[in-house]
Image 1: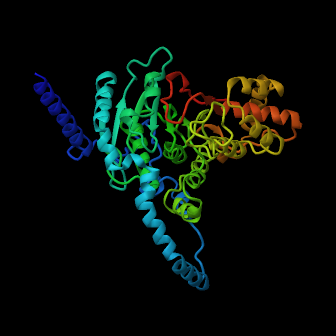
Image 2: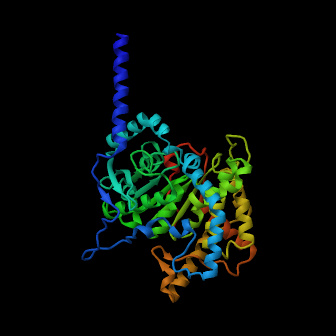
Length: 465
């Protein structure tokens, strides 16, 4: 009897692997949506921004470091540039080799075939759970670079709940070892939102290789699918990025600024400091060059290109996106070196430059050292921040700009475009109070490690003025 049971179990495991292998190749599935299947606005309809492949490649100017319309160099400059390129050729070749071997495996370990095969039963089980429990619908999308993107959609619009959460769509962007079958989409899903999950190129059933440019084009077709096939209004689309998924999330909101909101969870501002931390010091030059040329995940720069509501979730026991030498795991409240701090500072300095000058920057930097609710409350009370006064000041500034309305270009899909010059002429005490108020509205602490699943109650929508 035991032998029979063993054989049955062996056959069952073999079936799971065989089915999962067939499922995750995804080659036999028909294409459900292509990046260029964008309908024009009909009578009384509205056309959402449909970008070309080149424009949708996630801020190509950010990845390449070149801007369109750049003046042509003279013959002497071109000759010098050619000599410079010849001198740098050996370094470029070494950087390319590193990026397409060890570098890709370190930055995107989930794309390693050995890891994927080891996780196949779990991924299959997670996919079956999404389909059976949440009526998930799987779809194959084709990006403009030809990669096939594996997605799953859970629709809650028929039963949106008392708070209407199901009417909003949360597009989830996973981490570097995350899959939608067992990733960050569980928090918004259990919180009652409609959810669209997708696997980046090279992950799960998606084809291609996981490089920033491919992530960008994949994100582009996912957003177009949400707007033009699933028919969600842009204002009701929330983009949620966890860890390295913050790059794709900020890319989406920068490319489509009319999207409703952005939530970044355990995300960093730039990959270079984190890469330098884990690699040998003697490799620093090569590491910086490889990251800048092949893995330029500059989420902070892209974040400043989005004018809508933003919420940053900082995990207080995160030992992955920190750059300190603390032993693992970090004790609760050790948040000094968390790269999410830099993300918040960059965002506030871009949006409220007058508030974040001198006293404002110094006080927010100190506030970011508070890693517990008690420390936050004590710090907030010490400076006697008046929330009502801060709200009234911001609203009156927006209203005064609305009354003038001289430059129509200063208004976007979310109202008055940033940067705001509010805070000019304030006393140092008032500037500190306003800076603390804005920091608290844009960043929330979560008592968790980097890879802990986010609790549904911790998933919140950003603050709106």
